[in-house]
Image (cartoon, rainbow, N blue to C red; front, side, top):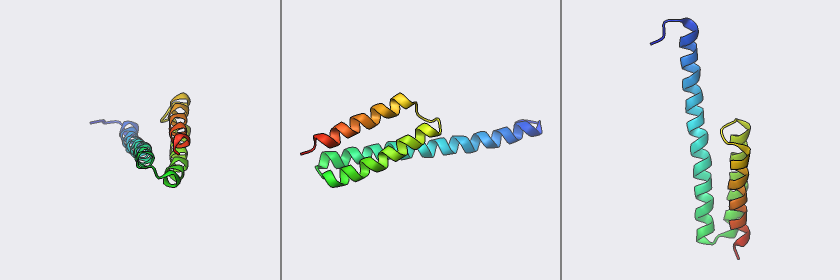
Length: 87
């Protein structure tokens, strides 16, 4: 355990940041998973709606520095292709 006051504060902020990152990661992954399920079920309207929400979550993750820009673009591109291919 840290003895210095600033180190104790740093431990608290790191814990908060870690918690926020876990929540953000879960939101992004769950959103992608839900969108994939809607695509597999064939519900184009629901898939389109979920894709828009997923894009927002992914962009937020990029702005927070959680995801790299190219990774986010790749994920969004793959989802958009899946949604567009639905008949």
